[in-house]
Length: 407
Ligand code: ZN
Image (cartoon, rainbow, N blue to C red; front, side, top):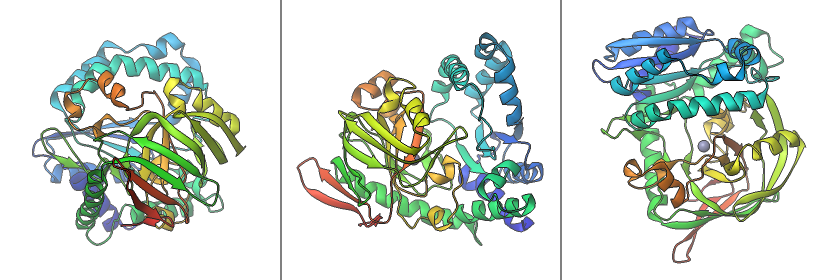
């Protein structure tokens, strides 16, 4: 890939993704796949004003070994030095950049229950630190190609051709054009206008209909916002948490959903594929499901915990989004969730509630934000999906017609 284009991408991540402030610390999490590119990003972070940039290198095959060989008790334990590092993060509030390049099948064959219990224990121990940091620092997730990932996406190409194709798909969908920073300013403005319009409608329900059999209605939380694109920290610093991002989303009212939804794209979950599936909701909960491929995987997701069979997200994405237009199935949620309208099982987003900063987590759950350890997106948007919003006073407003925005 052309060096100048990669530098533009690195600049975009530092400036639009993280919005690094003068003297601010930056932590980059990256796998070993793209050391040259990570070096470019580090340089762009310094040029953007970073006072100190730290790179946390990872290598996912090691994670697999640790989970296989360590006792659960060891996996669950957080060492003092790990807590000290978290304490530093909670105090210094560095920007966090996550560069994802992992093999979509990297966690295949791993003991999923052990993995989940490790995640649960660690999540509990790190919670107080994460709560202190929440909405107080800028962060961004973006992709870089890894060899296994590229081969998964382009199985018929030689590795270096596949890598080049994946770079192309990543840079195109990230809007790395002549002036990516400007492209993102315009994109963010368009998304913000759509969010405002949708939030101001005061919708109480969304009704989905498609020829593929989707006939579904989901309740929304009174006063909840639609969000998209950039976010703001409590101090008012804007950043783009996902690059790319095409979705306009909200968290629905947990426990209010009826009807059937059919998938429109495969769901890749920890190296396992679920395809051509449907879910039936009653009283907000999945009561039945079926899949041509991977039905057991789907059933296991639904049984993860109490909230896993309920919805945490409704996201609107036009059928002609750049991700869908690329024609690539990325096997990575950062990309694939931006290819089509989707729903997510599991955890919802408290930040869609007005004044969420001052509410306790329990409070947000009482208001209707779904609680779960998992958050699994699945695509339901296609070329004939109609979505109609029902306002609090019963008016019907077209939101999507034939897979595209109706406004
Ligand atoms: Zn989403």
